[in-house]
Image 1 (cartoon, helix red, strand yellow):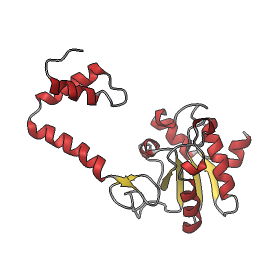
Image 2 (spheres, one colour):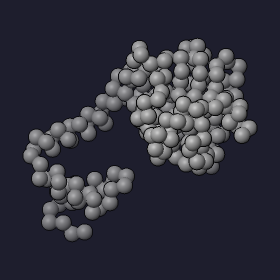
Image 3 (tube, rainbow, N blue to C red):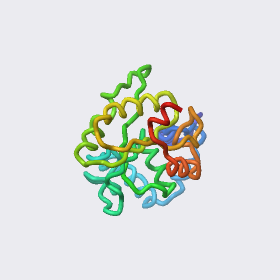
Length: 205
C-alpha cells in the first residue's frame, strides 16, 4: 500500500498492530483522526497514554484498576465474601454486563494449559488461596470457559481449597463446551451465573 505521506504510513502501521485491525481499517482510522481538530486528537492520544502509564492491577483481585483496590473490591455494597473466579479482565466485563452478580472477582490471568507451558505457578492461584483463607470467604464461583483447560483449572483450585469451609460452585452449562466465555450473550451468561452448580456435580457430570 503506497501512501502519499510517511507520517500517515507510520500511523497506519501502528494502528494495524491492534487485534482485528488490518491495513485498510487502519488507514480509515488514521484518515478519520486526520480530519479531527488537534484538541480531539490530543484528547484521544492522552487517554491512551494515561491508560498505559497509570493503570495497575488490584492488589486484592488482580483486576485492572486505577488505584490499589479496584472499584469493585472497594464497593461496600458488593458481597465481599463471594468471589467469582475468572480467566481474564474481559470475563469480568462480560459478567458485569449481565448485572446478575453482586460479589467480587478474582482474575487468574489465564488457565492451566501444560501444552502451552502454563502451570499453576504462572497464574494468580496462590493469591486466591491466601485470600479465601484470610477473608473467610463463603462461596467461590468458577466462571471459566467450559473446555479442558478450564475444567483442569477448576479441579486444581478445588483441591487447593478442599480443607477450607467454603462452598464451591460453577456457572451452569448454558454455554457450550469448548466455547469462550467472552463471546457468550448476556442473557445466557446471566442465566448460567444464576443457575450455578456445585463443583462436585459439575465434575462428575
